[in-house]
Image (cartoon, rainbow, N blue to C red; front, side, top):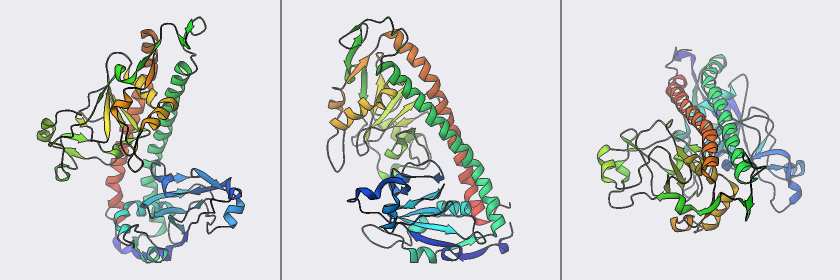
Length: 412
């Protein structure tokens, strides 16, 4: 690409920068309306480029009695504090809180999708423009002055088209993953909450359960394995961007399973020194500190042979009583989520003690029911893992292209 066709522009030249606002939370009439209202928290685990609404909506009255502005479709939303650098595109007219600086691109100067990718690519650089020691924040004045090297608008569109092709595939896969997760969870509820399992019409019940079923303590059904927290626990300088053994951190275990977008590794030598906390295929991982209750299933489709957990999670291993697929569904059930929330202690850093986990009662169905259920949901989780792996490959290819396209080194 001929860089002479690229020009340096300040963001304030190519877009109108608008801050968000929050209606008074003391006035009920300002809330639960039909206007989408987004906060940085809404984007913390968000897997899509476009967003239509956040967790809460505001009313027309709330909009008119606050500094929130109704932003047009295709506005680029940039979180400007706590944290800086979450980026999304408004799928429709939307509002944000004051944790955003929103860019309404001027069509003759900037393509909104290109600016989305430019901001995503330059997140770390943006942080350098923030002020404030305790809570760094990007002001509108500073954002307007940030310089970006940009091609003409048709070239911006072509670059955005290339990158969007990868994200379109990733987002379609994410939608399929969500449907598969929902289907597995619905099957669990149908069989083990509503008791509409195969043969339920003729089953005899006793004390609220089918006769051949019983309750069992979680610690009797599942081996709970902690990490090695001894003197060999890896120090910061012993983590690498690539290597022999993946060392899980809290960001790798989300509500929706594993997320390997940012990973750390330890050496084979360090791996051998650690006594416990290494995964085997079929294990389930559960976060137990900080964010309590996120889980992931380490089946045959996860693309890492050596994985260890950090000190904020535990391994749940099959003892031959209930299947890992059953455990994974159970962990995402309302009953288990409430139980973990009940036993979690500590306000600043919630923690779920192993001794309390062992006490939780769970349903232990008969062997045939367990086998049939496992066979059904296993197909869902195998496909989910395959889609996750595909997404990682697509994201890797996109991220290799992104800096070359953003710098003009790759001709389009």
